[in-house]
Image (cartoon, rainbow, N blue to C red; front, side, top):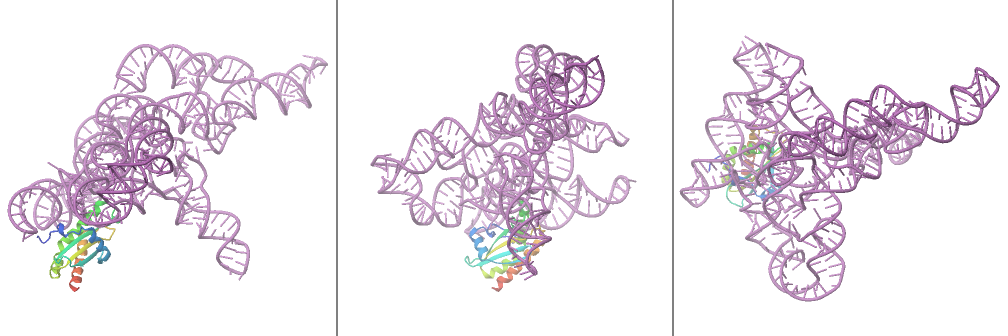
Length: 129
RNA sequence: AAAGUAAUUCGCUCUGUCGCACCGACUUCAUGUCGGUGAGGAAAGUCCGGGCAACAAAGGGUGCUGUACUGUCGAAAGACAGAUAUCCGUGAGGGUAUGGUAACAGGGAAGAAAAAAACCACCUCGUUUCAGGUUCGCCCUGAUCCGGGGAACGGGUGAGAAGGUGGGGUAAAAGCCUACCAGUAUGGUGAGUGAUCAUCAUAGCUGCCUGUCUUACAGGUUGAAAGGUCAUGUAUACCGGUAUAUAAAAACGACCCGUUUGCGCCGGGGGGUAGACCGCUUAGAUAAAUGACAGGGUACCGGUGAAAAUCGGGAACAGAACCCGGCUUACAGAGUUACUUGAUCU
RNA sequence: CGGGGUAUAGCGCAGCCCGGUAGCGCGCUUCGUUCGGGACGAAGAGGUCGUGAGUUCAAAUCUCGCUACCCCGA
């Protein structure tokens, strides 16, 4: 597996897991993005599933929503290495959702900074627990 | 040339790195490698029509909804070409409307009046009173009150006022008569597939809008969250058979006629669950791919400049979710063809 | 993805079907009443009828487009 790939297994798709994530997940934010995550050790395999949300309320046109989702996915894809290394020792399953919370269309640099910070903080909290 | 009108076509591109979805081949315990394909003219709004699917089907009438000039194409929506009326534009052109009219109803405010009369003003006859004249006769003239008659629209309000203008006519008037003009109806001739147009003759026949009404054609309902298969496995909804026959009642789009089903028993069956696959496609996903970053270039835009040039910016509207045909809306800019121009430049 | 609805005064709603005067309640302003306030009484102000076109003599109302908000369907 290539280091920067972002295949089907890494995407959060199940309706059930999303609902439980929203009801029992923990979160912290770095504007304009909020990160929502949950840890479980059911599978006993180090793995991550990620979802991206851009609310229709903030962006009426589908073009803008698609653009922001693509930028967030790219930022995650290029900066996820540290998180994976940290998970190697924990052998736990992690579910993450990124929620975009701004009415402006931010450029790629700002989004990447935000994602960088969020993933760093997530790594720290996981290693501590 | 410039500005414009109509139709039509297009609507960024190159390099590098890292990625995504589907399909195929090879290889595998996992997986990986290679190759191919991967947004639009509107994919949008969901305004119409059709396919497709399920349900309902026994039919008829009334009702309801939509459409309505002519020809051609089309499964239908609709498109193209034309006709008439009207509005906009100098113009090329563009917008809007269009079955039928016999009968009935309505048209606020304003205005005398909204189609039929009345009122005021007009003319005339009789009468009351007054004034003046006088040939002294209720004889003449004028005004006034009341009553009868005449005719029509003079009343300047309104979006709209009883065809328009001139002449005649009359006590006063009026298509009352006449000339010309506009329209309508009927008939003839010619042109056109047709709507219709042109022209001739005849008839004084002459307001507009809306609704009711009426004619022809079309329309069952719900939408891929339709629907099917598998897994999961539960209340008497549903289905089949049988039996009874009294009726309440229910279904058949709103109503009427009409038709069908009906207590019970036996057998099947299933409220639920929220998973997978099919439906699904030469783009074909299902928390939903078609991209991100870096660098360069073009159309084009802005500044400076006489020009060459140079500096800065740099592609609009917008992202498929069952599929087709239309309509509507958004859109930086560019090309092609035909045509127009009073005022602009050479 | 599909279907439906609403927009009128600061707030909540009528009026729209069948075109001609924009109204109701609460609130607001002024005056009266009271020692003062509340309640009460009297008077008054306040609306591009979401927006852009069209039809019409005339549009909140009829027709078409656009915008915003809300609801329903597993």
